[in-house]
Image 1 (spheres, rainbow, N blue to C red):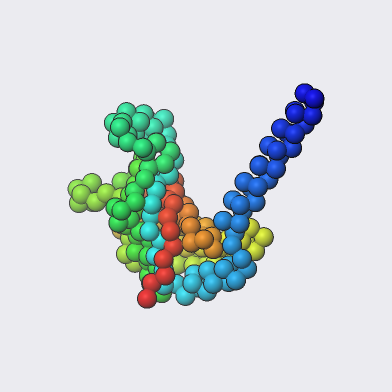
Image 2 (image 1 turned 30 degrees about the vertical axis):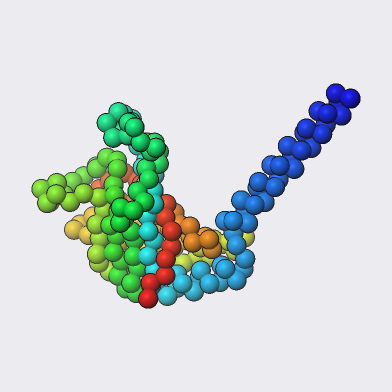
Length: 189
């Protein structure tokens, strides 16, 4: 009897894990029609990603500062900071990009005006180069890459976007540590 109960427990757990994986995949992937609609939206270059969370890549020093000074009493962690409602975004308009993104991490090289101007975060409003769009039909997602520059600082941007309109922005800068953002894709008029 005990062997039978143990066997049924293992079977039930296995079914539960498969069901969770299947529903997670369905939520992320969507249908082929959804992927085609997403492709058309991204090819049109008239969209905005509203940032909901920052995922900083910390060094030991920045991790200590973040945990001790910035996060006590909040639901945030040093690995994921909620920024919903704060107006952070990445916006594509045909041949230009506008980015207003928070930056949490270490700056490796400063521009002369970075701190004197009071500028915080990543602010870009300029044309971009090397816009590439790649479909991953197996994983049902799109990858967008491009390069943007502002005041001598270059940003290599990689975005992964799902048919559910969830997006991950990965930003590599010539002057700062790597950082990621999570958000939601919105079509612009």
